[in-house]
Every structure is written in C-alpha cells, then in structure tokens.
Length: 225
Image (cartoon, rainbow, N blue to C red):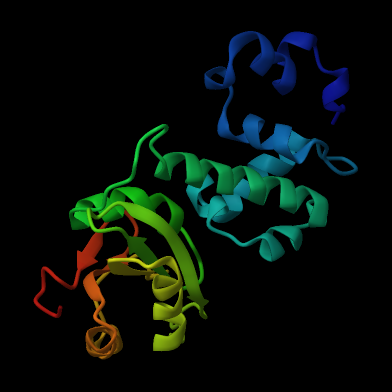
C-alpha cells in the first residue's frame, strides 16, 4: 500500500478538503486528516476505516474516551488527543448558539443545550446548570464522573457552585451511557434528596434531566420534583 504522499494530488484528503471543502470527503478521510499519519503498511485512511468498522460509526468512535482511543493499534497518545479534541469541539459547537444568551425555560431547551455534550459519553456524568432569575444559563459544572452504570453525587458538591455563583435556581443533569433515559430508583431517590436539601438553602431545583441517546426524561414532568 503506497503512502498518501504518493497518491495523485486530486485523491489526497488534505488537498481535496482544501480545494473542494469538507463535504467532499468521507468520514474516513476526515478522520485520516486528524490522525495525520498511518503505520507501516497502512495509510491514515486505512487506519481510519478500520476504526469506523470497529466502533460501528463516527458517533460510536466519538463516544470513546481518550485513553481508549490511545490503546488502538496505530493510534497512540498524540493521535488520540487530536481526535478527542476534534470530537469535543464538535460537541461544543453543536451545543452553543453563537452570540446568544442561553435560556433554559423547558426540558427541551435543556436537552438542546446539553444533549450534544452528553449523549455519546461512555461514563455517567452528573452536571449542574446554574441559572439566573430569568432562567439564563450562568454556567454549568461537572459534579461527578462515575462508572459506566453509576455516579456518586454529594449534595455539598451540587450546591456549592450555586451558592458561590449566587444562582437563583439550578437544573440537574446526568446521562445514561446505555442510551435509555428511563430513570432508575436511585435517580428518583437522589433527586428527592437533593430537592429537600435545596429547600434548606432557599434554592430551587427546576428539573432533573436524564439524557439518553437522542432522547431525554424530565423528572419534573414525571412529578418527582
């Protein structure tokens, strides 16, 4: 297999992107540009294609953490970091509306803002969105990162950022790596515990959103809050 540098100019991914735009390239070719180089006997495009086959899709690959990417034969730490950075930038771009104040007035607003950041994560992550008096997002804080099936959340870590930020209210969020946002008994128990703690602090919890793959569940809509 010849190196990409020996391919005809019109077939090289970098040159094609430059002259024709990213939409002209397949997923494997775009991944190959991020990888930068292949390994002995396999070009970067070959390696990218093998990764897409292994993980089923670009979304499946993007959901892996950087350490797992680094363990792929032919990738290593430097290439894994480049890939992880590209995937994270994509998630952030999807989640943000340029030059606009983010207002979280409904569960669908919350999912639109945080779904792209959380729906493909392989580990359970618990976040808190801090809101002003008009439901504008002040900032969000990652409270805990758990295993594939559970995360440990302490009320102190949930409410400390809200107190420091003088937030008027908060929205709780976490993802289910399985892709199914159906709340567990532990999700309900934790939510009720945090609601009671919030009352002591005169702080309102608007909702607890569980994010799955393409779907979400609002515990406020289910009457838990």
